[in-house]
Image (cartoon, one colour):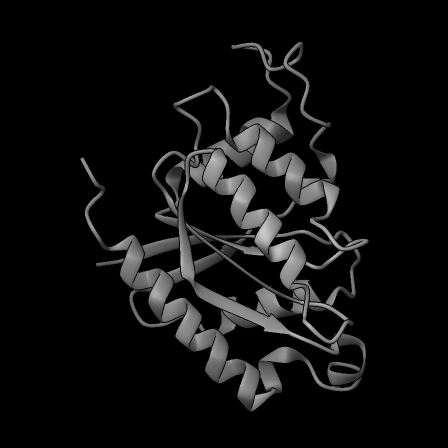
Amino acid sequence: MSVRILALVGSLRAGSHNRQLAEAAVKHAPEGAQVDLFEGLAEIPFYNEDIDVEGSVPAAAQSLREAAGSADALLLFSPEYNGTIPAVLKNAIDWLSRPYGAGALSGKPVAVVGTAFGQYGGVWAQDEARKAVGIAGAKVLDDVKLSIPGSVTRFAETHPSEDAEVVEQLTEVLARVHGHAGEPAAA
């Protein structure tokens, strides 16, 4: 079974370690899985119900909804900004949660991973992202976690795709997301 996993990165910075971690996921996707890195979160306006009108949804938001809708699962890569989830990732979740009860996240398996400079690797932000996607209707994979601390020093000279320990952990995450994506939806 071929599984499509959509990766959303909560950092807009070109050299973001979370973006590099997502690139490693693309590179190390297990057989039978394809990880697609979504580009364009920066172009999506802040969620506003006044502009979320059928037929006139902003193109960038519609593109996100279509990408998530056609994916079998999502993998969110979250840095930690001031102890919580970055606005760009929260905004993506808000757009994907609508229309209420039928958003692109409804019933879809979603895992949250990431790296941050602090000693806990961004766990607070990742927990907040899990909470938000769960409320948005996703099937949160609470048992699929990866928080890599010390990103600034750990990845100063090494891309995550070249760090054997990270690759091993990320491969396990991808295999588990792949497994959940292949499960039939609960009735």
